[in-house]
Image 1 (tube, helix red, strand yellow):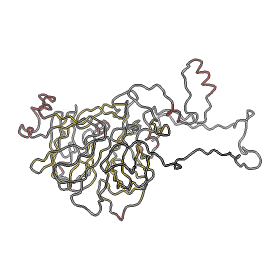
Image 2: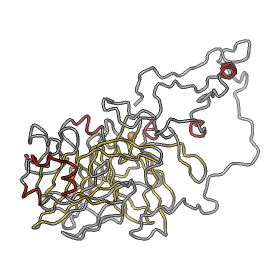
Image 3: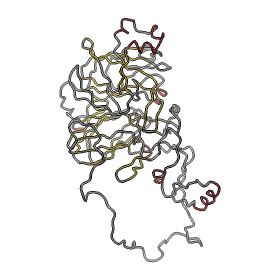
Image 4: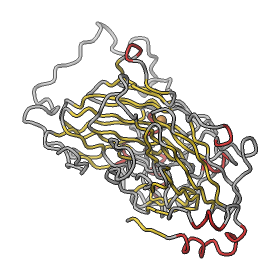
Length: 470
Ligand SMILES: [Cu+2]
């Protein structure tokens, strides 16, 4: 749901603070109205009604900020403020963001546009906005203390520059960065090409999202901003699977996905069933002669990667970070591995005292996904998501690219699960099972046996306490 607050309402909220604002009354009267968005749904692409035409992007679980034209200048109004972000159904985070959301809205402009961005600070501390990857006058770069004074609470600053080169960029604070980025302050920026540069293809579907991460204890609402590596929520646009929308495309569409990383570690992003090429970074288009095929591309911290492929295989294709801990949701980290540990005896003893005691992890962690264990309020299971064949046992940075013949151009609706043609799904073998061939002699040659018939040496794998594992 989109809500519009006019300037006077905004002034009412900020109270007397705005009277002492750093912009004059005349300039304030010219402030573009604030547009906010509170729904976490993926909004349809914003077709440009004014300015140069372009083919808009779709922000995964996000939206594009509307603008107004003022004497040939594209004017936007960003409001830095506390927000409540639903990260997945059943889990809300109290973050900081822009215009009602974390991440903030995507800003889309065209190469050569003169852009004026009003930034109002409604946070309890000062901030600034850095326009990552842009060519601009030094004083517009948004580094607090270095290129400008910080924007104090209640104040509005104006940034103005020409979007000089086409590409995929982002914006984020450059003031108390550790806190403000850990709280979710970031957004995407796209500068569409003006003409048709030979290194930039036209695409049918163009998606964008940012990789971000939070450390929110199960049951809590606010991120722990001191965390450096041990995050427990790995998200795309502050959403975690199964809260991340699927990327729905038409068969044979040329698809572009733009991914930016503002976490504290790298993320190898992997697609199933297709190969892609990296066609651009935040440094610009990759020359055609320098591209090679991949199914995984690493997006390092502070980087953007733009991948492209022709979606010519129908189906529901997994699309995820390849670090397996990043496709998990919140849980305690100091859990020793129990695989191969027989705790039946001890479990029987504990059950006499605590009837609800459950032994978990002795055959792997899949029972975590299957068990309906009591959880504190405001968290979601570590491994979750139901597919047409059962539990997906995923979380975090995971989604699905849905390729369908029947998906109409411009239609981004979820087509539901793929209906596999007969005879194209892996199936259980129903024939006889032959005995496994063995070396002649002792089947367990080389292994010492105790009197009880079990190997004397058992191997236990235990994660050291406090080790992050990432
Ligand atoms: Cu990752």
